[in-house]
Amino acid sequence: MQKIGHKHIRKGDVWLIENMVAIGHMQKGTRPHVVVTQVTGETVTVAPCTSVRKTIRHKYVVEIRPTKDNGLRTVSFILLSQSFAADTSLLQKRIGHLDVNEIARVQLEYVKYVTD
Image (cartoon, rainbow, N blue to C red; front, side):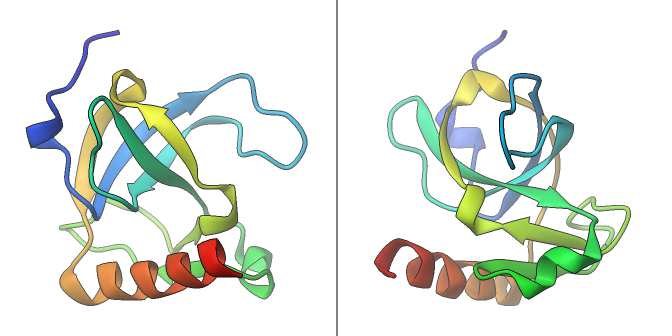
């Protein structure tokens, strides 16, 4: 896969990532992921999105409505408890970027997740 320069990846970006080796409750297939931390070297922390509404009852989930800017097609739920460090080569296509308020909500919930 082609490496994407870290200068082109920002916190709040929404990227498509393919995960074909998912196990357990991990999200499988190609789906949107939100960048939740700044890029460090060639690694970035991402959290997968799902459109399954019942996930909202779990901890560390942020609901995001689709907009032209974020590139999402349906109401999506960012699963921060499934966030992981990803090599930037896994990022396939940038589909959008969250707005400032959405990024703030994600960051607040992410801090709760990592400090809980």
